[in-house]
Image (cartoon, rainbow, N blue to C red):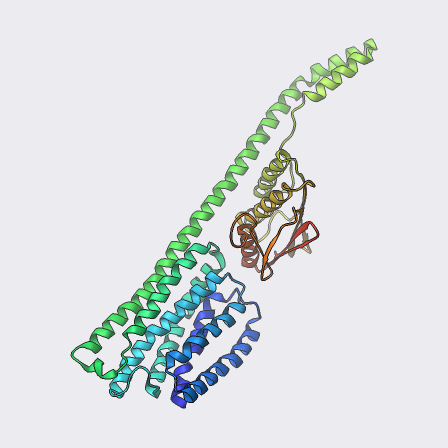
Length: 431
């Protein structure tokens, strides 16, 4: 019985590794999660040990259904999309599978007459030892770099692409594990398996590194594109402002002449001509299309950009912004967040007869920034497990996902809700 329990205890270090990159995506406080895992994992080990003894099942036959149960628990404890949790979970499973081959080779040295379906203290001990060593070695890179990817990479395709590789790296080591250890001692089978499985371990690590660098490159390119878009908005607003200044400069230059005309008409008592001249003068003034919503130049450019879009779409955009000029939120993040909010709100409001959007940004005690948007929608929303889905494409709404990711990256929260035909977004960000 102890050897069986030791073999199944591999799920404990595997669970620890799986949670490393999810440190910022936990639904529960860490201490509560540790308490639940401390109760749940030993319970699973006990159930697997009982099942193996009662029904004389092989290790894999017992582990397979429990792994599914463990994944359901794992995914339910996180605030991430299925593709992220499944990608990380299967990657850890493939690592445990590879380490299991090393344990089998050592086990074959001590028990050449047994096979991979046997339970021994040597196999369980070596497997646990190798997994514990991997936990120590992977702690820093998984927590530091892995969590960065999980937090920032919200594009689903790269995560789904990792799953076939993880399944392959799980299946092949299982096929390499000898059913009878006596075959390992024939010729150079043991050395060949050792070389092959080491290559698989290096491949596993190499795939993680390649995935990290490719995705960080994608994130960097996306950030550059967003900054470029922000600069284009600022350039557009600057050009509009300069046109306004040039036009008003000419008007100020001609204002003295206009005053003389007004004086002459007034002295002559020709009120009809005076009124007509004033009307013509008012209509000739340039219309100011650049407004000052706030003191932040970048944010002001974004607000003007969407304000002009709202005017062209016939939408009443009501903006109220009161934020400090200096704060801890980067211009790019704040503009991305505001842009996504207004993009979604204007799109939804544009499909209704009651075309209006309200945006409020304010601070409390200079320590919290609150961003609130309200807009009507046509009455059709898609919900799955409490999450709003895109009404124009399959899956989650990209804008809402990006908003939540930005808020969480600053230790804040984004909440979405609806009532009747109004959609609400409430965001709180610590400053």
